[in-house]
Length: 263
Ligand code: IPD
Ligand code: CA
Image (cartoon, rainbow, N blue to C red; front, side, top):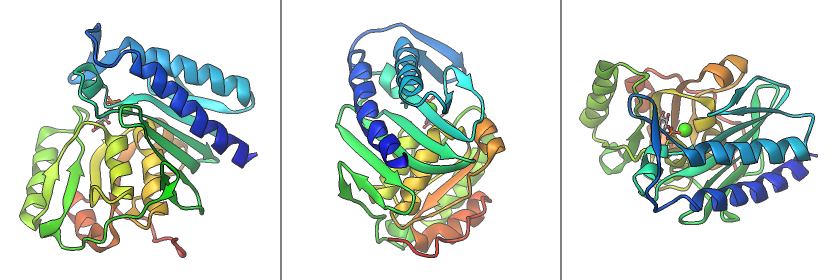
């Protein structure tokens, strides 16, 4: 059953990407959900498509999406129809669709698809992480002076907190960047394009798939399990093993215990 669901997820996320691409590179209406929080008609259309397709294929499962919400359930699909909506709205080709499948509060598989580059990151618990079907691993860099961390930001977090953590990371020697899609930022840790990703608060639809991917690719992550985290979000940290300790201290985000056996 899990294998059927994982196969379905890989297919449906690509179809959702095709739907979103119909709206890329065009002038379009943009609404603001809040400060620096963009919404286009394609966010809603894509989520409606995924909600309908998942309900039809697996009617017993719950659904929790960025735009339409939902509730917790023992078997739950957590969906971000467009992550990096501000980029999408400005015709910047750095956005994705993110889907995680969660059983009893724990992610079992996750997919992140950038439809512009046609890059599909996928991970299943205990089975490793892949990019377009090829196994990926976190980068081997362990010196902060050669490392890049993506530090996520949203208006949900106080400015001073963001500035203090950025200052701590810069003092430690990191290059700090922010590219505007937390889900892709995490996928890029899994495939070695970033050494780490951190953000003081993320919603579950932005991060569950990516956290599993980093763990399956040999990185260290914070814990993000259970109903409360899924419904309300929480702090996020994912890193190559050699830099996870110092980042955890600077960000004040505890790490989960390392996996006993990492592929
Ligand atoms: C946001 C992006 C951003 C992250 C925020 C998210 P959205 O999601 O992932 O990079 O820092 O926490 O809310 O609004 O593009 O779906
Ligand atoms: Ca998002």
